[in-house]
Image (tube, rainbow, N blue to C red; front, side):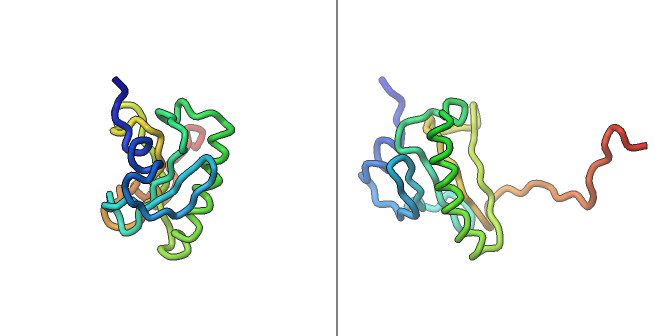
Length: 123
């Protein structure tokens, strides 16, 4: 029996109502019905089932990134910045490649260094 796939089973065929942000023949970008995290949250998925970034072919990858670029520009314009992330392996809880465009409270932050870390060749 195939694993349940929320994106293939419900989102892409529009079984549930989502706020579509962008759509092409190959890719769908939408705001989920229940915001996962952050002030703004868009999910970008290939319409064809791809389990993870590790299985993404370059042609579909180009389509996916083109939509991500289209989606992030208005998010950056409105909020000043955002994060684009995906998960792999044990961190990936839905076995359909999806990229999150997220900003604001609830989004993990990487530490900001005051200065670059010294390189191994610095004396």
